[in-house]
Image (cartoon, rainbow, N blue to C red; front, side, top):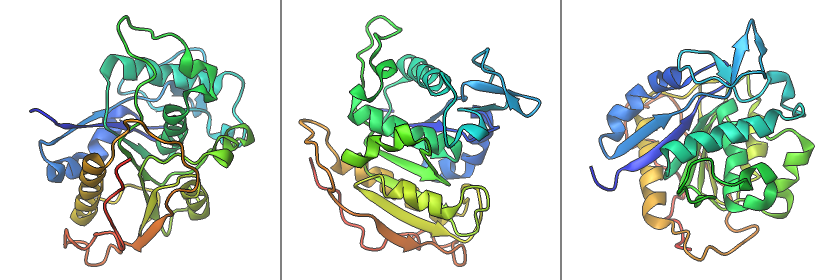
Length: 270
């Protein structure tokens, strides 16, 4: 199908591409054939509850992570670099993509990737020569991104990336009011790092809400951003736009139109 919207989906800690596929199954039914969703495995396999940095996993059934859970506030030496190389290799083999979807730690990785896509000089690993002949690297930024239960970065060295320049890629942040894994305040701190962010709350916890109206909400956001956002001659702007917010209660969620974002206006063409 021509002009399909290609979505790259990043799973959370202790999950895998196949697990995230299952979590997105009901959403994909509503999104329809216009969307192609590609899920990828995180780089590091979990071994008895800990992370093995000696190997990079390619097995879809393996429980994996982007980095050790204890590294949220400070990466171990080489840990983030290994995650970046893993992401790059997958992207070069399977890209390009229009949209990034991240859940939990996968969303934390996506937060960092969005900054790298807009400012490739932030990290030397991102600018290494392409691993595959003929690959044009670095790629253009995503048209938009959707984060569920996002947090981070917590490492001060990477928080600094967002102090002088907030990425202007349109982002949708889905936050559970009762999330006990990713503190909602940490998710709001993540929202503040983006210049064109929208926030939607749900009544649940640390999960991707499955009600049909969330599926429709995500679809509408992606289609709107895809149609309105153009990265040609992208200017560098700081402070452009501000987060808009709505509360998407799971009560009455059977209405697919109930998730329309308050104050939602088409994104400016850049």
